[in-house]
Image 1: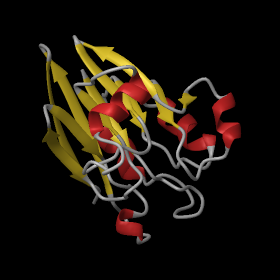
Image 2: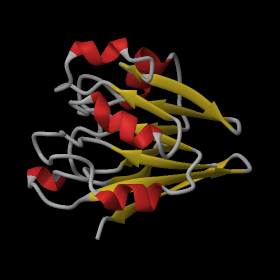
Image 3: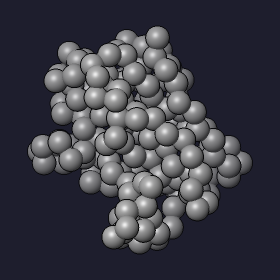
Image 4: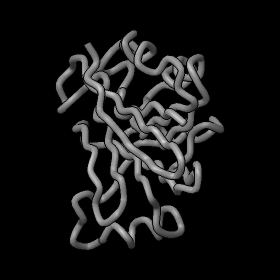
Length: 169
């Protein structure tokens, strides 16, 4: 299974819409996960034309987005035997007052194999304490600068996961 990942699109504040390159990179994916700070549901509608979409509400997203069935505060999925958590914010590196294992228990009911998150606008793929952490960065506002940014691609096959960051050009 190939899963397109993005976060922190901030449409229309950072950009008028999603860059066309996102559709090119995500062509043929099985699913798309948006890790929050969406701003407008039209972003999810545009992504939905490519593949099914789930999204986490970001800290800058209005609560009205939760009226859309694709959007939740957090999503917990199981794919090919792996537990995946989708959230906007993950305490990485661990916050002194909230270790990662405690946060996973609070947010997802227990340990996860993969955490997809956003918020920092900085891409990251790292395995930390046995958990694959993936932050796709921002396609429209990387490092809080309005320009073409990054998305992620998560591949899950035979109970194994790998992720990569893709610079949009």
